Image 1: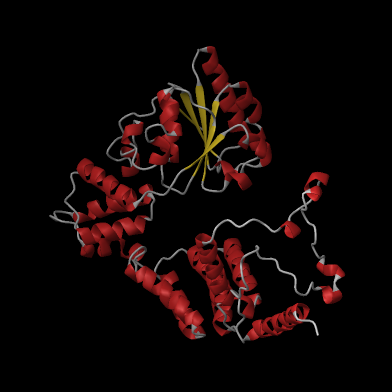
Image 2 (image 1 turned 180 degrees about the vertical axis):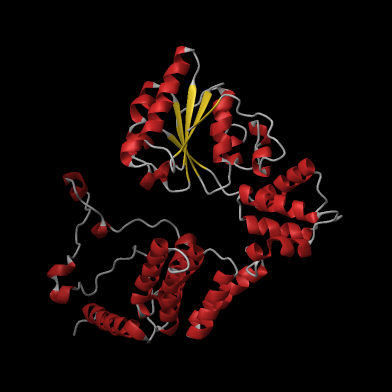
Length: 436
């Protein structure tokens, strides 16, 4: 447990660059303007010196700890830091005792819990009575969805603020601030672009890499890509996240799967992972391929893609990568269809361009007598009571919308059988409209 009264003491030169550049006022914060801009929630709280308990949810390196420190500084509060990875109930008890002592001295306390999602239910519950009594202001930081990882009782007593990854422009601004502090040589555009892409919105990652880079620069008059490769080559590799190579490799993987070439698909997957692409990102793309290019021609493809994602989450790298490879091979050899993809795009285009048509009375819900008296549900044909479980000739689109065939099954895999079934049903519809 860390207890701090002097939140913003000048750090020594040996302190990591990210700590040396930690903002001391909200005006120094780079990013999070949706929370800190004029009239925005946290800006208003700072200006009014009114700080409620809160959960700060966002990816690593976006300023969660910084905002917690600034909150404490705004109300001149005693600041207690707990790491949920290391702390236990004993540490929580000590924090409570410290807060009680501070209250006796007429001072407020802010308890900051980093990675609060790692606390179990009992540990999270230990905060509840003290948050309710106002003994201290609780601030939790998490990279995980608090809806799933934070107890509902604690969540209901805190405001959730969502922090965003820093944009490229914001990272460039942070780099310039670091350059001035270190008195470092300028960086050319190509090297800056590569370094910002490597950071992927994470300020801490950016500053740690830049600190190493400057230390390796020696008497260089400019930091270029060659120095970047020598210093951070293993980290940068070939993926060039955010650049053309990154998106080209994804495109090649997708096209190899669509083209039913398992060997090429495996090659591009390996290239992506070897180049530093987050396997979770690759997993999301694989799930997308199952939906877009295989669809209902082989519904097992989607399940296999989802299973591979779950296996990776369970095992991590490198073991979990085998499950992603298995999914890629299955998708590559599976029957292909983009029929649902095309149908969905077609329906969405139609809905965007069309007016808001009313639901026909026969299809409306009628849970009350009033609704029934208005004709809701009148004339509806319950398909289960019809021959073959199908109300032949019935229409379910809004009145005024003509016959539509957005979904046309591909003549492959399971969709061939779906096409045959739809043909049977359409024949029954035609017969119902034109009985002999």
